[in-house]
Length: 122
Length: 106
Image (cartoon, rainbow over all chains, first blue to last red):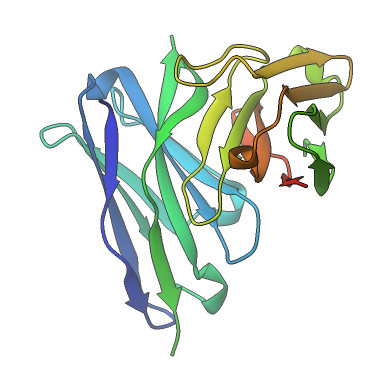
């Protein structure tokens, strides 16, 4: 079945960077996109952006512009999300999810990875 | 920016019907997707494109979208349905999530 498996938990100091991976399997990687969504403790879902695995085109949420980079590696069918200049309020669980695309239009997110806890603390 | 408004909580007894609303300006012009998130777990898609269900989701879950309100309905609520439910749309190439509604099964 389709699976997205994320890298393990990270602990970072303020100002550092983190790179989370999302290894996919059992589907045609370049026919879909990858989105990243985070969830701070006790809070709702916050969308960070998405990348088309076919074109490499990205769209980032304004809150993360200039601080986030999303990439894909088609040879390993893996997506990556790098967040720089980390602050304490970046402490959250970060999720990747597969994006269904019709033409060039992104739609729903299914399935999701298991999540990666990133803790930012001095 | 586009805003989706969800009630913070819904409580129903087992076997009853739970309804979750997602309010947005002319939301009927957008495709609404719904996710279920149980404590400590990743979100799961339960309804897409307003009213379609992934094959693994029980028929008890249904959706509709009209005017300024989209609705997710769970018929015959079970204890295992207790979770947070989020609506989601795309607006000008940006994703918007509602704040989520917590379902408590009494």
